[in-house]
Image (cartoon, rainbow, N blue to C red; front, side, top):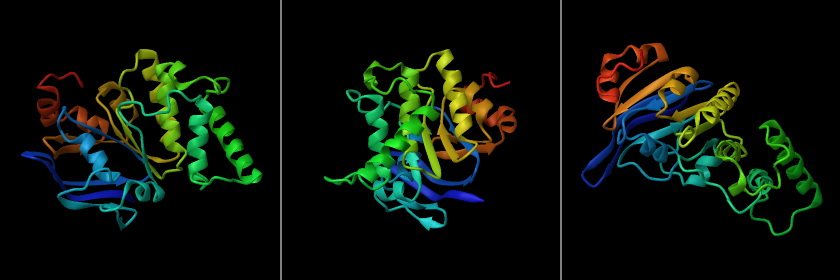
Length: 250
């Protein structure tokens, strides 16, 4: 079943067409990766889906509802969350408080001055559960700026998960990671894919080919190809447009 669709999605920045009549259908329960050369329109696509920018034409449909004109917070409430290429956390605050703030907002206490003790206990329990689940127990009091880059990446994805999304968008989760951390984050993402729908923008082709159920290839704002990792690996058009004719996907 399709959980998200874009229909004729078009966005211009001056004379540059970042997305060009883009039609996509994202299957629920699948890990779909979006690849393409720099400037292909991948991050613009994410920004359009999440309401950070508005399209010039076309629409975004999530679970049968047109969400094209909704503000970001309403898109999140409907079940879409995202991480960013540049890690976006409260660097001066401890790991625990970063997760706490996400859980508190999800449970509906984000703007309250006074919150009853029972509600705070529920936030505390959920925060502790999440930290234990992601393998960062024992680091609760560590300021984010003192964590390893891999830990920060996992934490950022986790904060996005506190919104309890049905669809999670990850924008270049391997960016800046060394080899061991790449393996760790790839395994973490694969684990997440067992329980929710993921849409991932990524340049690390070894990771894309190993974790994806489906791959979408963009080129100059358009859909160039889509298919299984095996089909994309063998696609000559993809190799020419994305890899400059170098058959490194073989």
